[in-house]
Amino acid sequence: MKYIVCIKQVPDTSKIRIDPVTNNLCRTGVKSIINPLDLYAIEEAVRLKEKYGGSVTVISMGPTQAQDAIREAIARGADEGFLLCDKTFAGADTLATSYTLAMAIRYLGGADLIFCGKQAIDGDTAQVGPGIAEFLKIPCLCYVKNILSVDKKNICIESMTDLGYDIFSATLPVVLTVVKELNTPRLTSFPAWINAKRKKINTLDRKTLGLKKENTGLKGSPTMVKKITPVNFKKKTTFIQGSSNDIATELYKIITSPDTSSKLVQTNERINKKVYNKFNKNMLIIGELVDSRITDSTLELISEANKLVEGNESKISVVFIEKKIDTIKLDAEKLNVDIIYYIEGSTFECPDTEVFSSAIEELVKENAFDIILGSATPFGRAMLPRLAVKLKTGLTADCTILKIDPETGEFLQTRPAFGGNILATIICKDLKPEMATVRPHVFEKTFSKTTTKRAKILHFIPNNISHGKITLLSVHKNSGKSFNISDSRIIIAGGKGIGKKRSFLKLEELAELLDGAVGASRGAVDAGWIDYARQIGQTGKTLQPDIYIAFGISGAVQHLVGMQASGTVIAINSDPAADIFKISDYGIVSDYEIIIDALIKLIKEKNSPYYEEKRQNSKDRRGQK
Image (cartoon, rainbow, N blue to C red):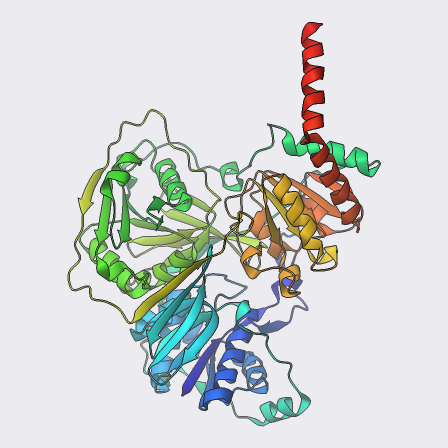
């Protein structure tokens, strides 16, 4: 067996800070590291080599100093490494990066299994793995959390979803993007480092790979950064003091207040309302269905698309793909779009990104779409990059702000980068369609009550779409409201500061009393205290609850990326200097256990039959007066 692992050397984003005077990123003294999720990819390839035999090759694209990352990978068990290094590779976006890596893999003779980390912490796009697969025309399995079996022809894996996991089989060769639940990376030894230092790192340049200059680096990149904006999460924090009972009473008032609601960050900044009809846009939304129900993230996209084109003659379409689609249900939804396309058939029983992207490619080529939007869900992040490669256009991932510039007609796509320290505004200047995925739960799913738009429902039948090389074997959904945290109005989040795994039982109890859900920081997940599916932040989930209560969370910027759209943020931490207080509406400096015990006790008292009777009697007495 031959294994290739694609790795990236990135700046340690946890060490990057913003200069308070210039508002620029401070990289001085910030070391470069192997992208954290790539460590799990290296480890899994080495484990498979140790079990089944074969060789592990590591490749990376970057400047000469990226050799350090390759040597570390060799110290971790890889056999050899190749650096793709050429001045013409500089400035590559995800499309150009995927192309260069794919051509290098082809140059090296391919592999049975090609591993990538799910995403890189600097760009956080999750596009390169699916892009490589599309250029090589091979299957791609994303969010791999467990490899069940491998032989010379097939692989069987578990893939993480928002609701649990799916089990897939696929024919080799295949690209795998992995998550941290897959394994625990080994520690390196001194002899392994000595061996790695002695290894020659081979360099592959553009001419060696036979690549055209216009397909690589900046010239081969359809997307470009138009503007960089430093992020300021700071709020004016009100600190609550007093006895534990006093604090619990005040918290209860805040939590149950009808004024507590989400404050969407992207609505703070809207472009001039003046409409220029010459910039009409023909938009396509990639819709998603779960159990035949239109997902909230799709409804959010439709709502935001209508705001983008408000007042002009733009046309909005949405496409749904399933094995069987109930068009009566689609019609009953009264979606605020012009056309609903549906594509159905047994071919689409398995969510194979190659098959789905091929069907949408045909739809796009028959229509002059200017903009394509999809949700940054696990499936959207896996499928849209393949579609972008097919259409030879740019894709901006995980957007939180979308605009159409009224002066130029440019589609401005803004997304967090470098661990959420900055917002990068991206454009795709010369190619159509322009594509973006949007983070779920950062836009409202509201529609105009006065709309009279009635969608046409059209059945689109793609040509030459055959069954792919991936088979869905089973679907596993975790039960319980607290597991699927994305749609909860109240989030009770725990960090490393709560001290131990058992402490999450109290967070679960509070969440149940408040009809909320439990989330966690990366530190708590890395400690093994709670499932990765409940991690909030840059490498976890993005949420938009009305109330976010953080127990023992320090406030690292990577965590803030996932909860910055929360309505009211309440932080409880024993460290008065914790960064979490800088972005909280309310702060409590205390041991978390004292506060949570008092709050649980108070809620139980208020929800007891005795309390309800007492409250009703008091109300009756006031009425008599």
